[in-house]
Amino acid sequence: MDTKPTESKTLPSAQARPVKLEEAFLMTKFGLYNLCLIAISGIILAAVLLETLGISYVLPVAECDLLLTTREKGVLSAISFAGIICSSHLWGFLADTRGRRAIILPTLFLAFASSALSSLTTNFWLITVMRFLTGFFISGPSATIYAYLGEFHGKRNCSRAIMGASFVFGLGSILLPLIAWSIINQEWELAIPLLGIVYRPWRLFLVVCALPSFVAALVLLGLPESPKYLLSRGREQETIAVLRSMYRWNAGRKVPPLALTGVLQETEAQQTKVRREEAASGKSMMGLLKRMWHQTAPLFMGSYLKRTAILCVLQFGIYLTSSGMYMFFPDILNRIAQQGKGVERTTVCNAVYATRFDIQELAGLGGNGTARSDLCHQKLDISAYEHSFVLEAIYALGFAVIGLIINAVGRLPILVFIFALCGTCGVLIVFIDLPLLAIWFYLILLTCGFCISVVNACTIDLYPTNLRAMAICISLMFGRLGSIVGSNLVGFLLDTHCELTFWISGLLLVGCGVLSFFIPNIYKRNVSEDRLSVSSR
Image (cartoon, rainbow, N blue to C red; front, top):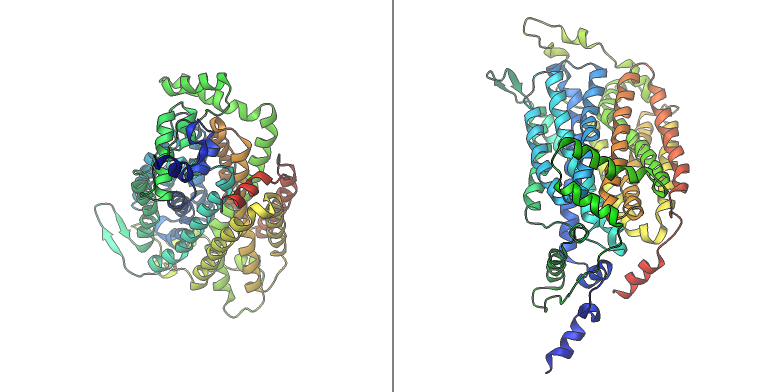
């Protein structure tokens, strides 16, 4: 007799009737389960960074082993992003039709395998192929993880969860220069006659960079599919089971189970449902391509066309600088350190011009095709690691700050401020003749990567569940295209027109700041979300 009133006080009153998924998320509370999801999502994002950007530390010290020219360095630094672009559309389609987790899990294992194999390659073409495959597979989790994480949260906590994962990603990315310094600057080597290689520290570094993908995949084995995706597939009971598990983790195992009778379906056109069912049951390649087109076409039609175009251009501009210019960051810092000995005032580009070389002269090929060891650099200058560490620390702190203020300040002021600041610093680098100050401006230029997560948060809000993963994959595909353009741009222009590379990236970011004003609904702050945030405390 006395238990019913007690339960009615313990559990939400909405439990006796089916509720919307947004209300169900409020019932599950925000706690340990959400924090674990944020942590594993951040690890996956860090794994993507290590797989794609770790090669930037390898290029300066592997140039002799692989006989790399500056242009080949540009190709090798961009090839992972080419793999990401080639597969982004496929993974986006499969994530929307087969499931988020179903794509993230196997691609993490495959990315680890291909990255580990790339450490055993002997020439430019072999490592290029393997790094392409690494990018092809790591593309699966790189964009899908945003949709996966966001679909475990309601609107009130979605942006905060994504920024929380980005903060974990920032902490993880701090490890990149530390790992590089602790491994690459060692002096050991191991001859492997069977493979015809000398196993040096940079090869081990590639394997270590792949380990987070393997660890994240193991953890993901114990996590379910996202409740929003399950509900969109009509699997209501599985959705309820996930929600009850979330509540049990967040509220504690001693509280009564979440008494949820049903979850209302989200509004979705019947035509889209039919297409989704066809996609899930289809087998032929032509049918697959046709269904991929049907899944993609809505993003470029009607009201979605404008927002898709804006988001794609923004991601292109961000990635061109944050990834493309970053790929040569350790190399350029290494050159500045070499030129800086005995030189007090010089611009970044003058230091680059003074330290350029011809790989054929450096190679001094003998019968075995190896480079002259007395001219090869097997280590990076310590300043390259120090400034890289500072950059990653700025990212970690910046993501934490953005996560705290994004709901109060709004997304538009954050985007405009970052774009304007980074773009201005990019232009000023050309004129500064104090190396240390120029390096700091270079650091600020690269922090435009803060905008990636903010733009992804906008993307999640602008598209329905059935198009969300594809929208993120398409926009990030254009972002990775920017990485390819940026990396090859630096590779082709660095030794001859260094100043032009900084002009292009700086002005492009300023243009992205202007374009941010045209993102749909970017001016609106969700008052109801703030009100829910206050009432839930």
